[in-house]
Amino acid sequence: METIFLLLAILSLMAFIIGMFNPKIVLPFKSKTRGKVALLYVSSFIVFSIIGASTSKTPTVEKPKSKEQKEVQQNEQENQEVESAIGKPIEIGNFLYTIQSVSFRKSVGGQFMEETADGIFMLIKVSIKNISDETKTLDNSLFKVTDANDVEYSFASKASASLEMSGKETLFLKQCQPNITTNGFLIYEVPEKGEYYLHLIGSSWGTSSVRVPLK
Image (cartoon, rainbow, N blue to C red; front, side, top):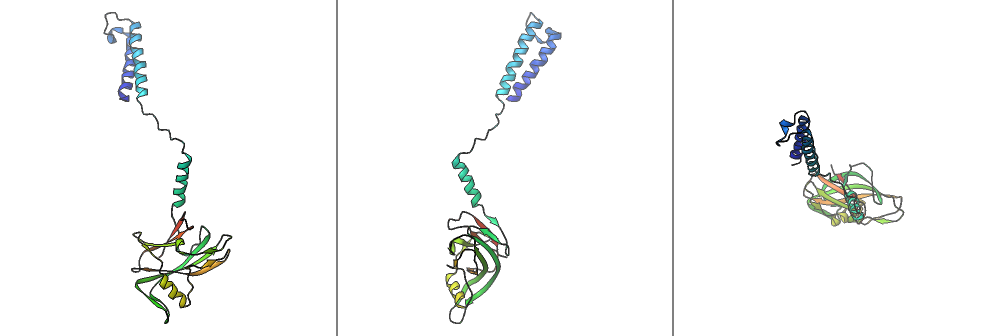
């Protein structure tokens, strides 16, 4: 629609120019004068130009975001998960994590307390430094393991106890003192050796997290 009115405006302008030289060509009236050419086609040009301009698309002006919208956007940015790697220090929340290694075992523990997996146990060796000014307790809310299909696996608490009895330090419910590094294992039971990810959560509220491929 906009194009049609602009085209009519151009034709009106051309008719005005031609009429200034020969009014008979562009005027349908008996009285063919340059004054009538100017009156008819200048007014037509103005009218078509105004209509064409008014029907053009008005640029969309982005409205300033409200405080609530800004808070939602900020929360979405904070909840975005970034990816890291084994052996790389990861600072998140109250801790500085370093995933040292990943291994798989069918059973863990010793002769007095051995736990055998229906699938296979995945042992994740981690060092954690408490970078806050308060003592922090390590619990399941700080860690999560998923596979390539985003299936989540729970912490193997019985296997963790067996691992402790065999002399290997685990991280479940350990207390981390400020500015001290704690080393230990996380243990999960998974179906088979494959592609898994450890998610490190910044706090008990899960405001931010880092995903580490366990390769």
